[in-house]
Amino acid sequence: MNKFRTMLRAALFITLTLALTACAAVAPAAPAPAEPQAAAEPPAEGLEDLVAAAQAEGMLSTIALPRDWCNYGEAIDSFSEKYGIRVNELDPNAGSGDELEAVRANKDNKGPQAPDVIDVGHAFGPLAQEEGLIQPYQVATWDSIPDDVKDAEGYWYGDYYGVLAFQVNTDIVENVPQDWADLLKPEYKGQVALAGDPRTSAQAIMSVYAAALANGGDIENAEPGLEFFAQLNEAGNFVPVIATAGTLAKGETPIVIKWDYLALTDRDTFAGNPNTEIVIPPSGVIGGIYVQAISAYAPQPNAAKLWMEHLYSDEGQLMWLKGYCHPIRYNDLAARGVIPEELAARLPSAELYAKAVFPTVEQYEMVRSVIAEKWDAVVKADVK
Image (cartoon, rainbow, N blue to C red):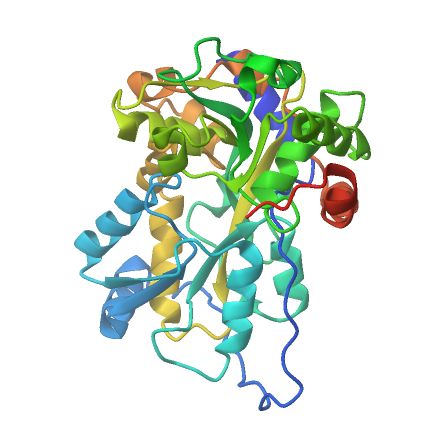
């Protein structure tokens, strides 16, 4: 586990990211925005008063939190059960750009369609802060969140990270590909897919990014990744659909490139039907991080603050880890010996995680624009 801790410390000293989607502009005819809620400062009286204030609000509205993503199902249910607060789950399949647009669109709406909290790729944290869409709040465990993955005032803060992997249906694929170059083999004709559209999906763009690293590119050069997928498409191996757990199980996309924590969760859910194998390709290991924030226009700001306390407690951090997402307070948890051995043993190889590359926000944005703009011309595959 020492190698993993060393890697995480190094990785967290790099500005991280993994999300995108173009942000839609506010319509010119839109009414003047409402004033943001007051900054979400922790009450001086402590957690008991925060709980009482949150319970008086009675509801929390989340967005873009699939229940099988990082074990959010347990996080949501345990929050609701512990505090008696109903969780209104808005559009679980939304992307980071959709989340910010939901905040923009509901500035004057205090109803259930207005999200209280967001969970977005790191690049969207500073973007939302600059636009005035989020408000600061520092959780009780603030000091154990590494400085380089949080805003100093508490506008946004890292929550978890993972790396890209191959998810393989071994009931269909006899020889499991072990690295990026293997995907070009004729035996994988009509079998390889992405878990998103590389013109708009962070997960898919990062997949192309990782392929670039494995094929002569670097942290600022994604062109080899586009060329790789062009070869994959020309060979007939690439399937131009957005792959899901369902398409993998049915054999429509028996090899899917996706975040390791999602693939590992699918494996547990499948329970052998189908059998799957998860491979982290060693020649191009790339990772990314998500961040949390509270909407500046949150209808339930106290419930939002209590939700953050729930997620950043030891209990909440271990829930993310149960969903194979490495929580941002991992070093602190490990140093204090609070990570159950059986839970740590379920994680993929620390040696492979030690090879992970984490692009800065600037590097990611540069590469993202290249992939999104050139995908159609270079790869010639309309992913839907």
